Length: 495
Image (cartoon, rainbow, N blue to C red; front, top):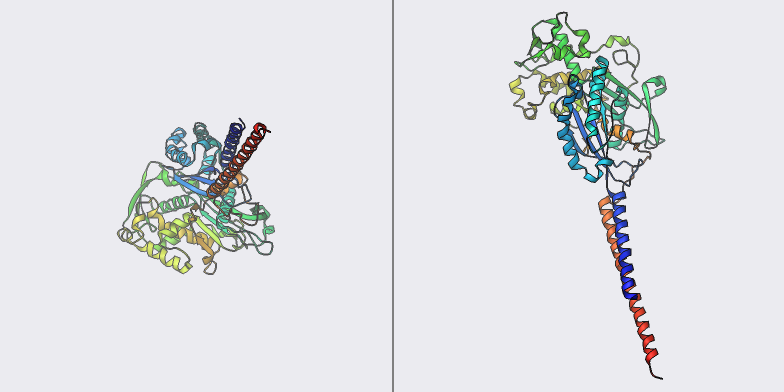
């Protein structure tokens, strides 16, 4: 009886310990997930982030594990048919469901942040913008994730979140004796942002936002230029060209011999081009554009997009009368900046002179030549291929004549798409902020072992401890049995 009782007790303890280990494994070693939908003006991108469950807001351990581009245009394009949003979202969300374990779906937070495209739509038609957001809310009610809402973020917020992402991924920290942070340059479809730590934020405190990163407070200068995103800027350039001629328009930024046609509504229907609409504006009328491939004229046309006279020789004023401190330190330029540089076949560190020569060469070529050049052919089918000449000139004027980078400071700009496997985008900083996971320590704390390996070792040593415990119980049982036998022998031994 004692023997079998000991075995039963041992089994009960083993089961309890196994259950405890399984519970600890789920609570402490199963990763957690977050979903961010970056609803830009031209498209929506879905990001899935993962971090170990045992890590809180003190460590830089969040990593991107999945990225998916939603088919179709940005959500602001659905102003007349908000109900049609669900179908294109479905493909990406189904893939997300496969990447995240089913038992963690209901505990996975999802966020949607809309940027300049929706900011413009709200200014133009607030009712339509609200209907688009309501449609997204309704769609996510049927999804298994914990949807935390769809909101339109402001331009300064977008810039700040991009700055947080850039510094989070590059591991930049602040030390009391030396400040080392990375500035952020973001070029979207409808707006562009610049964010960095100025030399003295007290010169204009209204232009700075305060954030605490790695345990130190920063006053980040950030500004968002509405209508200076790549797509809206090009639409404004087409509207300016139309003012010169009425029907067949020469476009010096298009490759030689390239011809295309757009409706007036395409490039004059935006809020950004409202002031440039011709008197005889007919939304459905086609306007033909003929490429001339003239880099000199292209630069002149692009320069007209910037109001450099508004500053009136004021110090620390780039254009359009906007205050901006002198650029300082290293910068990471992502999104549209990176894609244009990549199209020019540039990478790594290169000088401003190298950029200018590549841009001039690209803009001087015929369409047939461009498609045959190594590196360009693969880009031919992409949406913006034919506009990379415009994009390059726009970037030149924005960075050099606008933000005041020069030949000496140009090498401080790092054109990057991602760090490791994580995209440089405002979406990561957005999620870190909303989940209160902005790092609070000056050093990144990493586990010496991966969570999976650590869990395996824990199970191994637990199993060894159990075997030792069973062996001890066995020894106790054997010892007790021997004592009982000895006692019985003493009782029955004749005197």
